[in-house]
Image (cartoon, rainbow, N blue to C red; front, side):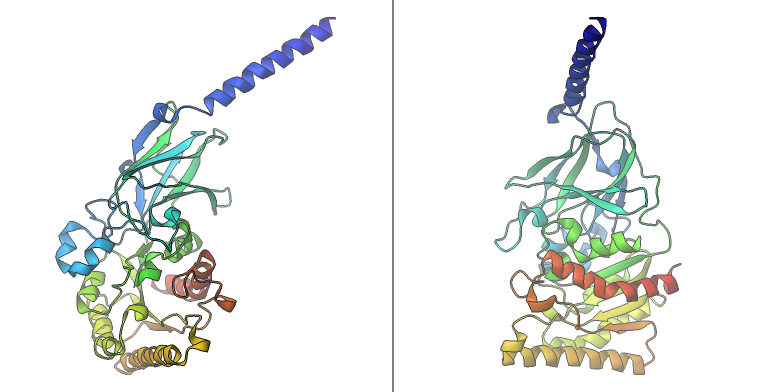
Length: 374
C-alpha cells in the first residue's frame, strides 16, 4: 500500500513539475524581457561608423551614392547580430524601414530574420526563421524549448528591407551578453562584396541563405554585402565608396548582370585602377556574369552574354598587363545548378543557387584569407 501511495505521489509530482516547466517555457510574448540589439556585437558592416546602425552605408558617406542606390543601401542585407543567453525562449521584435514586398521573392527573405545557434564544434546550426507579414513592426518567437544552458547565437537581418530598431526577447530572469566566442573573427580584415540584385540576396528564401551569409559561416570572417538590386554598376562613385570601407582585405566585384557592353568597355579598367590605388594591399576578385538557363536555347542572349563576359575578361588581362597586382578572376562556369534548378526566374537564385555560388568562390577566398589577413 505504501509503495502504491509513493507511486501515486511521484506521478502527481511529475505532473506538477512538467506543468511548471511547460508554463516556464510558454511565457507570454509581452512578458519577455527585450534587450536592444545594439548592446551586442553587430557584424558584417562594411563601415564601422554606420549610422543608422542597421543600414549598410553611414550618413557620412551618403553623398557618395547616386540617388538610385540610396533605397538599396538602406536595406540591412548581410548584417547580423551576435549574442549569448541562457534563455529557453528566444524571440525578436524589430521595426522595418520600408515594409517592402515583391511577387517573386518570399517574405521570409525580403523582410524576415533567421537565427543560428553555435554548436560545440564551433559550427553554426540553423534554428528558426521569423515569418513576417505586411506590417512595419515584426515580432516572432524562434524557440521556447532550449535547454537553459548558455548558448551563442547569430541573427541575420532582412535582405530586401531595412531595420530601424531591433530587440532580442528572452525570459525575464535570463542572462544575456556580448558573445565570448570570436566567430567571425574580430581581427584580420573583412571581405567586401559588391554587385547586383543577386549579390543583395535575390531571391533567397531566408537571410542566412544568401551567399555572403553562407560564406561568413564557412570562413569565420566578416563578409560585408554591398550588393544593390539593379545598381551593381561600374560607376567610379561606387569604386570610391568601396575604397572607404573599413579593414578590407578583399573586394569581390560581381557587376556584369547590371552592366552594358559599353559600360564594361569604358569603366571596368578605371574602376579597378581606382580601387587598387586607394586600397593597395587588398585583393580584388572580378566575377563574370552568371550563365542564365535560357542561353542554350536563345542565341541572341547567348551571344550577348558571351560577348560581355569575354570583354570583362579582356579588361582583367589588360589590368594584369599594366602591372595591377593581387587581382583575381572567376569564370562563370559552375555558378548555376544543373538544369537551371538554381534560379527562381532564370536570373535570381534559389537557395540551391546561392549554395552553388558560394561553393564556387570558397577555395579562392580561403586562399586569399590565408595570404592577405592582417
